[in-house]
Length: 484
Image 1 (cartoon, rainbow, N blue to C red):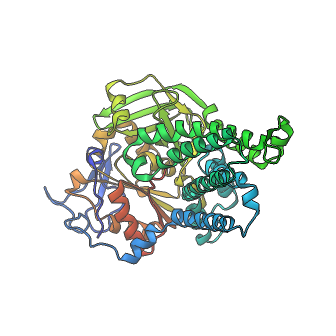
Image 2 (cartoon, one colour; image 1 turned 60 degrees about the horizontal axis):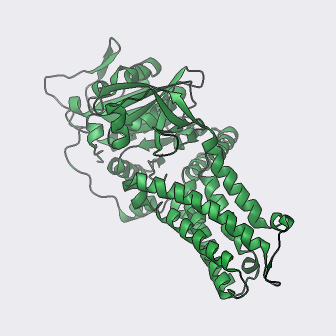
Image 3 (tube, helix red, strand yellow; image 1 turned 135 degrees about the vertical axis):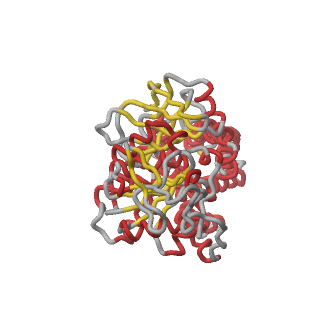
């Protein structure tokens, strides 16, 4: 059976124990607001559910289906369509893109920007959650969740395609360099370099292992690329290839598709930054491994916040915990692992920068389902708890070690105050003598709770094993992504 490997933050992440559900081991009891294990004899563990061995690897077919997810399907589809278009244009079988290459460049980049825009994303989630909550067939609702979770595939596909069209545009300009002005050629090269650097910096191995490098290059070089694109567009549309002269008439530029695509890109890049504010924050440090940040005002479930010590640099995303929109406060759980979160312990802030416009995560689609299970390990509770607090049809499974001590009384109170003992299972691997058989836990709760779907937030290893187990068992599940 599958086990969940816990990282260092998770090993120091909790003091709760299994409550409310256990089919094979001894029951649990809740006394004085705390959940304590009912152990028959001292030192006894529950062999039916504590993992003592590693599970064999999932089949290649299961692993391929998880690898070739909706993200990669979107990426493949977008790239295939655009590459076919570039090929047809290159062999002069399709004349339109040769004449209006800029529209294909900027059209793709505009779509790429939209897929990562908080406002556009929230609008998509709102439409889907409003129109399709609970009543359509399950396969359709699962499809909606999958599409919304993997919009990054369209983002990556369109951004890469836009760059390829830009290279094609530059090639055409150099082929006709005698008819083009040197300024247009130079700006074409600079724009390609800026967009190329911004794109390469977003590769997964850069983004996930060198976050600050990714952020600096993808953001600031990307902004330089937008500025270069504006100059490139205006120069290209103002230069008359027939007369070899500049046309100062701005009406000519306004009539081109390039101008309006570029304007759209600029507006949607600016929108999230208009909502940046420095807000008050209360910092709770229950242990050396976890920081709890408390902000004013309540939030709907399924949202994530980007926060930073400065107004522009080093924004980090964390799941929002809130009891509802009418609550007076919301919380972020930050595992102390990198320089940013470590600074919250060493030098606790009284104010912090954040975008007031929050972005939606996969949990935001929980309203589509009648009943579901929210599984998390360690600090993954930050992205999971709001769904269970605000949706009575959702069941919480939290796997960690020594949770109450590490996460403190604030998080404990939120769970015990809002969730009845029939709605959560909290596994303390320190008290239980080891990690649980996660797939047995999920499968049993899935059956007994009558769930339609499982959402998983865990580290890479835990997510992989649970997703493979759910896929093999035929349980609809959505796991953690590392594409933003």
